[in-house]
Length: 192
Image: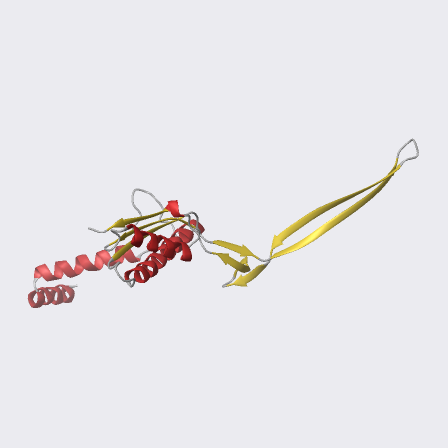
């Protein structure tokens, strides 16, 4: 025990007491955060945060919006007389993924006779579909055969050269050539 105290006293002499205290505190903090459940506060359990499909859809929408905005800004900025451009798009919904489906049609035929001697034939059809699933990373997920891009709801363009009615019309025509958006959902304004 005496040897430990001598070594500790020697260590304190070499690096100094404040530095040794800092090292010990850093070690305790690292140990606290590295132990599972060590960062629980007031009895709350730490949950494993997994990205939900809603969060994934929102992230995909944001990326799609930014991509389309940047491309539209680049195209419009290259037009003679327009100059600097800022674009904002709004989307109606997120992208839609269409899964492949298996279908079955169940057919029933009923022949009936009534008391007066009349005959009746009744046919019924029942359709049942289910998604085709594939294995990916140990989990089953639908096999997607088609992805519909999000629908553009409206577009705002702020451009340096948008001071004349002719340039505004050119911008609106260009946007309508690229997106299925009605003219009243496109707003073009002059940049200050």
